[in-house]
Length: 101
Image (cartoon, rainbow, N blue to C red; front, side, top):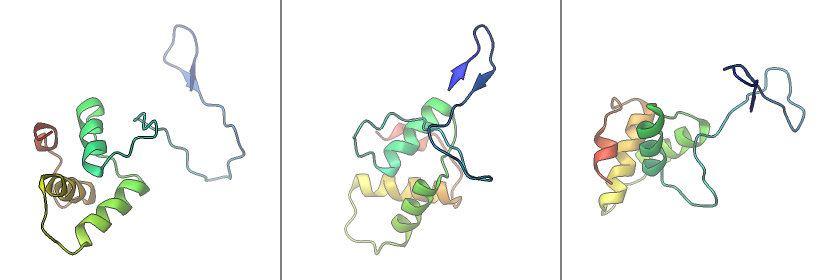
């Protein structure tokens, strides 16, 4: 992403061919090889950018989390389950995600 000097107008240069109607996306997180849980990613996006991510990765992980057979859940699992429900829209996004780190 390159911005014209002194303006808020930018341009994006693709490094590969993009099919007509193909999806473009931008990452908001510097994953840098770290394995972030669904809860951690959603928390960071909510804190820094004020949105709940519903990209294919988050949606698929949320669906797997909600449909997984509940076993003895720890605190991290409960946070991932709550984040999954928020991603899928069964709970409204709240600051609760941010308060439990």
